[in-house]
Image (cartoon, rainbow, N blue to C red):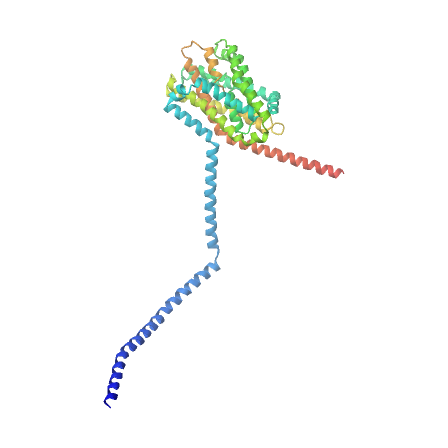
Length: 435
C-alpha cells in the first residue's frame, strides 16, 4: 500500500513538471500561427504588385523597346565617333609629323642644321630615297603615258610659271604701295613665284590624293629643266635683274638626284612582281613622306639657327599673303581644269595632279638659283625667305586638302566605272535584240 502511494506521488510530480513545457509549446505554436496569419496578407499584397507590374510591362512593351533602342543608338554613336577620330588621325598623320618636325627644329635647331649634316642627308640622301621609291612603285608604261599628255603638261607649266608669277607680282606691288612689308621681301615673293615646281612634294602629295604620280614627276622634272632658262627671264621681266645660271652644275645635280634614283627604282620594279610591290605600297608611301618631313626639318633648323633677318610681323604678313595667293591660284586651276579637261574625256586623277602642281615651288632647286642670281647681294637672306615659307605652306595646304581630293577622285572614278558598265550592258542588250 505504501509502495503504491509512493508511485502515485511520483507520477503526479512528473506531470506537474511537463505541464509548463507543453503549455509553452502550445503557446509558441499559437503565436507562430498568429504571425503567419498577420504576414500572409502582406506577402500576398507584394505578390499581387509584382504580377500587376509584369502585366503592365506585357501590356506596354514600347517602353522597354525604346530603352533598348536608345541604348543601341548610344553605342552606335560612340563607335562612329571613334571611327571618325581614327580616320582623322590617319589622314592627318603627315601634317602632325611635319608640325612636330618644325617644333623640334625651333626647340633645337643645331640638330637639323649641324649635327645631321643637312647638305648630305637632306639635300642628297632624302631626295634620292624619294625618287628611288617613286621609280619602284610606278609602272614604266604610266611614265611614258604621262610624257605623251602634251596638252595637260603644257597647261600646268604655263599656269605655274606665268599665272602664279603674275598674281604674286600684282600682290607685291600692292604691298609696296601700302608699305605693308619691306621692298626686299616683296622682291623675294616675286623671285619665289618664278621658280620651277617642287619634285619631291609634288610626287608625294599627288600620290596621297590618288592622283597620277608619273604625271607629277614628268611635269616637275621638265619644270626644273626649263626653269634654268625661264626663271631668270621671268625675274628679269618683273624686276629688271639679269644674271647667268650655271647649267654645268644644275643639270648634273638633276641627273644624280632625280634621273639615276628613278632609273634604279624602275630596274628593281622590273625584277619584282606587281603583287609584291602592292603589298608594301603603304610602307613605301610612309618612307617617302618621312623623307619629305626630314627635308622640312633640316630646312627650318637652318632657318631658325641663322635667323630670318626681319621681324615676326613681316613674316606673319608674308605668310598671310602667300596663303591668299595659293587659295586664289587653286580655285582658278580647279575651274580651268573643269573647263579644259572635263571628266568624261579626262580622268579625275589628272584634276588632283594639276591642283598640287599648280602652286608648287622647288626649294632644293630654288635656293641654288637664287644664290646664282644674287650671289653677292646684301639682301640675299630676305630674297630667300619667301621661298622658305612658301615651300612648307604648300605642303601644309596639300596635306589638309589631300583627303578631300582623294575622296573626290574615288567618287568620280566609281561613277565613271558605273557609267561604263551601264553602257556595256546597254550595248549587250542591243546586240541580243539584233540577234
